[in-house]
Image 1 (spheres, rainbow, N blue to C red):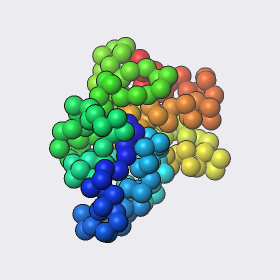
Image 2: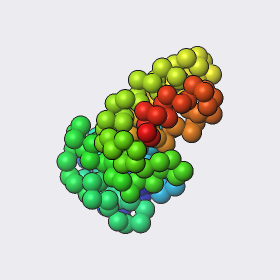
Image 3: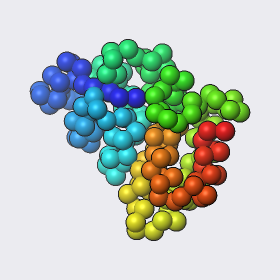
Length: 171
């Protein structure tokens, strides 16, 4: 999902509003309406930014989807582990990647739980050349985030090794 700062978010940033921690503020600046949530979470994983932080900023009215339309799951003010499960809506734009509800009918959370260990194994096996990609995978907190990283993982490990991850994510 691509998010952008709301007028209230711009004001909070300008006034150094107390509702944003310093690490959240660093991530908040990156929401420019061009980068996906997965890309921003990957870039800020080292700071400890999670999907929960993003959900909190949405719930506070500081961030909104680019089109102004909040998917039904993201509009839910639930914060915490349940929010990550709710954040994956079938309407999520994954580019050329399959929809999370296609195939076996598993939920996005089930797909994420099956794919995450495979993704970390594959990227950890790349050594230093895959260090950043491994950090991005470790920072992925949802199916959407992991699916966004899938093309980069495929490119790094090759089609043969990627097949296991592809089945775990998109079968």
